[in-house]
Length: 130
Image 1 (cartoon, rainbow, N blue to C red):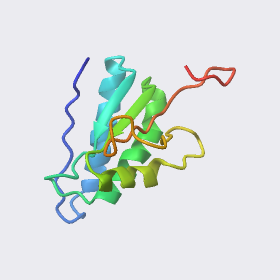
Image 2: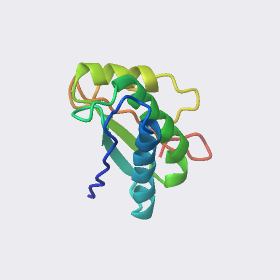
Image 3: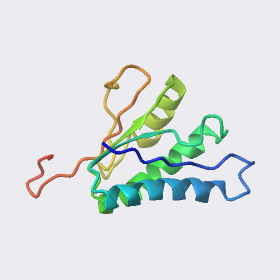
Image 4: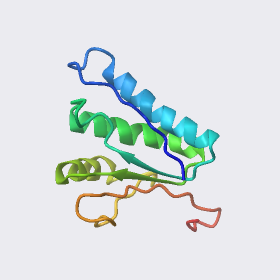
């Protein structure tokens, strides 16, 4: 097991480069995961707590960057850990209908009503999950 500590930006109104800084924090997670040959990740809603980043824009960035960089990182499964119903609903909305099947949302969470697993799995050449 390995802990990758990623610090996102404080929300300062949105005109201080916060979206780019948050996206950079997520990219750094996947870069470190690649370097360490990590196959699964659990990621919280970075910057949305005490740092005050608005939930829905932060969720959109998290899901977008995961879709962009996870395939090349070697990471096979990403779980966004949600500690409230509001965060759970935001991740379900943002990650729930992925036409590319990068992220799928289960009907219910595996750790209780406030934790959501958004999972990305590779498929082999015959279409089977591995």
